[in-house]
Length: 143
Image 1 (cartoon, helix red, strand yellow):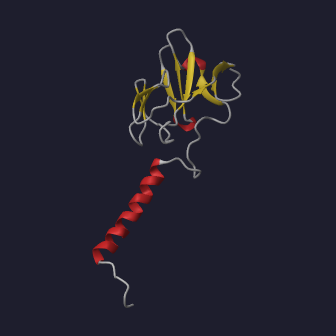
Image 2 (cartoon, rainbow, N blue to C red):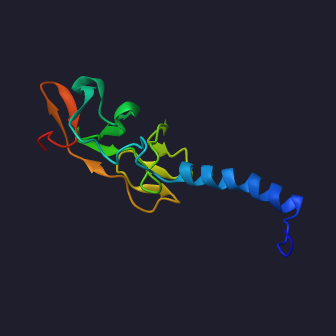
């Protein structure tokens, strides 16, 4: 058509190449309604036998997005393992550090506190108790 500028081949190729990359980046960085992990369990979850977690130990439960620890005094603490930065489920426990695979945030699995940014908010704490010899965490656990 006369009077309408025609984009250069370079501009068309650059636009086509950048569009899918930008879309994928946004999808990977932000939690959505398409199967993203919930920030915390919506029902009580069984984390195993009480005797399986010794004092000073920490245990990651990837399928439930929960980490539980027992301090030197025997007190249990549990936290959601959904990163507070971008909602990614954390599936790696290194000693007592939880490492987010999306952007590298790190959390103390015993306290939920942020050890390394970009996350700035601690992990969400969960009620946890021992019921009939089992460690139970999440809503309705009775704590």
